Image 1 (tube, rainbow over the protein chains, first blue to last red):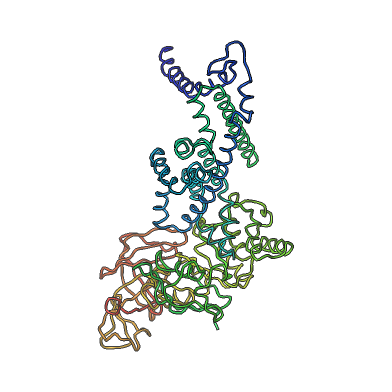
Image 2 (cartoon, chains in turn brown, blue; image 1 turned 60 degrees about the vertical axis):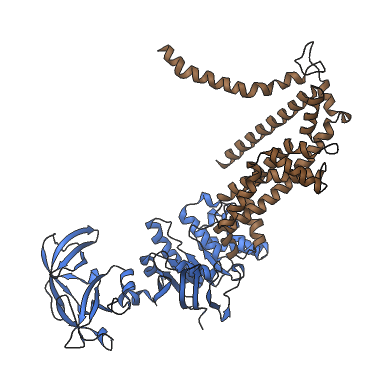
Length: 267
Length: 357
C-alpha cells in the first residue's frame, strides 16, 4: 500500500518539481553569476562583488545607452502598434463580413513567417529605402512584428462586447467618434493595456531582425548583449539578466496584488 | 396628418427580399405592434425606422419630412434592444444620462432628468448599480428609461420582453402600457408573440414573407381577419373546408349543414365554389343546438386539462378535426360522441386561397 501511494502521489509530484526546476534553475543561476568577483562568467570564488552591477550604470560601458535605446524603441513601437491595433480591431469588429477576417490573416503573417526570412527581406527593402541602421527602420520593423499581438489582445476584448452597444449609443444621439471614445474604448481598456504591454516586450527583446538591420548607430539591449557574448564573456551580462528578472518578478507580484484587491472590492 | 408615414418601403439583401411594398402610417401617441413569425421582415422595418438599415426603395417621413437617409443619431428616436444593450461600464444613472451628456445638457438639468426617469420606472434606489448587478426585469427598465430620457417622440422596441420569464413578462406588459399612457410617446413595438401584441397594441401590423398582410386594432383582426394567415396566426383557430351554396347566394355550406353568411355577398366566388371556414375553439359548445345555432355530432379524440379550461380534439362525421376549449366542469371523455353547437355569427368565411391566391 505504501509503495502504491509513493508511485501514485509521490512520483508525479517529484516529476513536477523536476520540471519546475528545469524551468527555473537556469534562470536563477544568473543571480550568483552576477555577483562573481572575477571578470569572466563564473560563480563567486573569494566572496561576492557588486562591480558588475556598477558597470551597468557606467555610461561609457554602453549598457545604459543601449537600455535607453531599447526602452525608447519599445515605447514608440508599443504606442504605434497599439494605436494601429485598436484602429484595425475596432474597425473589423464593427464592420463584420469576410474582409476583416481576411485582413486578420494577413496581419498575423509576421507571426507565421520565420523571423529570419522576414529579416532577409527587410534588409533588402531597408537598404533601398536608406532605413538600415536607423531608429525609424527599427521601430517600423518592431511595429510590424508587434501588430499581431496587439490585434489579438484587443480583438479578444472586443469579442466579448455586444455589437448592439454601438447602435444603442447612436440611437441615443452619439456620433461615431463619441461612440468610440465613450462606449467602445472604456470597455476594451484591459485588452488595449495587454496589447501595449505585449508590444513593448516583443520590441524590448527582439533580436533576430534587429541584428540584420542595425549596425553601429542603433544598439538595442539585446544587440549589446549579443555583441558582448561574442567579444568576451562579461559577467555584466548576468548582472543585466538579474536586473530584468527582478523587474519582471516585481511587475508580476504587483499585478497579482492589484488584481486581488480589485476582486475584494467587487465582493 | 400622421406622425410617421412609411411609403412603399422595400429592402433586398443580395437576392433575398426582406421587405417589400410596406405602407404604414403611425399616428402620434399610438401603440403600433409589428407582429410576425421570425424572418417575416418586422425587425428589418424597425431597423429601417431607426436608421440602422438603409431601405432599397421607398421613403420614411416624420412630420412630412423625408428621414429615409438621416443618420440614426439625428433621428431622435428611442430604441429598446432585445437583450437591452446597456453600457456595461456605466452605472444605471450614467446609462440614463448618456443621451443627455451627448446633447450637452447642464449638470443640474441632467441630474433632475435622471431622477425623474428613475422614478418613472421605479428604480430610484438602484442608480449607482452597474447593469450586471441587476435582474433581467430591472435591466429592462433601465433600457426603457435610457431610451426615453432625452424625450423622443417615438420609441422603437425590438422584442424587449423575449428574454424574461412568463410572470415577469406580464408585469412588464402592464408596465409598458402604463409608460405609454403616462409619457404620450408613440410606441412602435416588434414581437413574434401574438398574445403580447393583442394585450398591448392600439393597432397590429401582421407581417409574413416581408409584407404587411393586414393592419388593424387587435379586436378587429381577431374577430374579422380577412386572410387565412391572420386568422391562423392571431389566436388559435380551426379551419374547415366549405363551399358557397349553389342555389342560394347568401348561404354557405359547412359542418354538414348550411347557414346564412354576410360574407358571400358580392364575392367573386360563384355558387358551388369552395371556401375556407373558420371557427375559434372557444366558440364551439357542447349540447343540442337551439334556434339559429348549427348543430353537428363529433367524436372526442382526446381531451386535456389546461387549468380553467378543458381542451378537446373533435372529429366530425366527415373526418375533419377541430379543437374546442370548454369550461372544465363540462365532463367529456375520449371516444365519446357528443352534440356540438356553434352560433353562426361566430363562424368566419374566407376565400379558398388555393383558388384565389
